[in-house]
Each structure stands twice: as structure tokens, then as C-alpha cells.
Length: 254
Image (cartoon, rainbow, N blue to C red; front, side, top):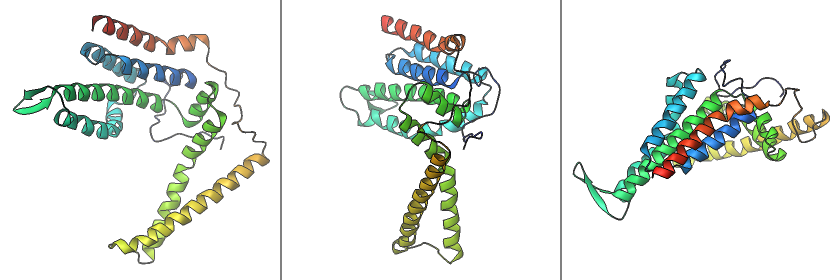
């Protein structure tokens, strides 16, 4: 449990962003997203500046642009929702390429796309430069509730274990001739889901008891790594500070 753990979004590296303490990155991420969301949607230039800042951050973290673009697929639901807004929105309408579109819907679509894209890109950079144990330490140092931090970390750590168990059960069903084609054959899947839940519950109970026997007191053991220095906090807060200036100018000129 105390060994190094990574996740699908993590890219091993030694860039300046990788070396920043996790609590600094998490705090900077939150501030950046809040600043982007608080920026008036009419300030197109401000979102352009934010995009340049995020691209500079990607380059500084030495993350391949293709990696970021692939992970941006998670934004597809937001894109689909934003695409429908000009057609379904009410109020004053305008003609665009022969289509009658809602002006309020167009503004809403732009607002969602711009802010969601920037927020997701910022999150991908943080995830690509932070391991799972670092996330846990960062949340603890930011004084999030211990129960919430522990539960979230165990959930992520054992997600792959449960997924492997589910794949093994699927192979076992198919090796016994299970070939689902009709709705009434879904009973086997329901039974497997129930069995998987029981196995996961029992596994969690065993892990918890073994941790208690090793002195677990509700918090992960301290690895002895020093907390962030003042210089590291200043470096991490430089981008949110610059973004805050852009937001302020955007509101003044809006």
C-alpha cells in the first residue's frame, strides 16, 4: 500500500511542474479554475490569454500535446450539450448560415465550451504530473477531512483490482458457454454483479483489518517528505496571480 502508485493520466518525468509540492498544484488548480469561471464570457481575448498560459504550462511540464488532446475526449458531453443550446434556447434569434439560432444560446454555448475546455486542460496537467500518493498527501496537507481522503485514495487504488475481478468473472461466464443475446439472459450479469459486490466488500473488510493490525489510525503514514516551502508556494501561485490580473482587466473593460 505504501509503494509507488501511478494512474492512467500520470506521465513520469522530472519537469519543474512535477517537482512542485502536490498541495501547491492542487491549490493553484482550484484558483485557476475559479478565475476562469469568474471571467466574463464577453472577454474573448481573456480566454485566449488563458489558453496561451495553459499551453505554456503543458510545455513546461513536458507533456506531449497529443496526450492532452486524447484526454480531452472527456469533454464530448459538454460539447454536445453546448451544440444544442443555440437551437433550443429562447429569446432573440439570429440567422447563421441560414439557421435560426438563439443569441442567448450562442453565448451560453461559448461560455460552456471555453471554460470547460480550459478547466479540463488544467486538470489534465495536474493529473499528468502528480502520482496518487502525492494527491493523498496534498489533500491531507490542505486539511481535507481524513475520512474523505482515505476513502477516495482506497477507491482509486482498488479500482483496478475490482476491474480485474470483473474481467475474470466475464471470462468464466463465457468459458461456460454464456453468450448473451436476449434480455432474459441478463440474469447472469445481475448475479455476477451481486457476487462482485460481496467480494469487494469482503476484500475491503480484510484490508481494513490488516491495516488496523499494523497501527492504522485513520490517516496514511507520514513518509517524511517536507512540506512545500514559501518559494515553492510563490512559484505555484504565479500563474493564478497572472490569471487574476487578466480577469480583473476583463471585468473593467467588459
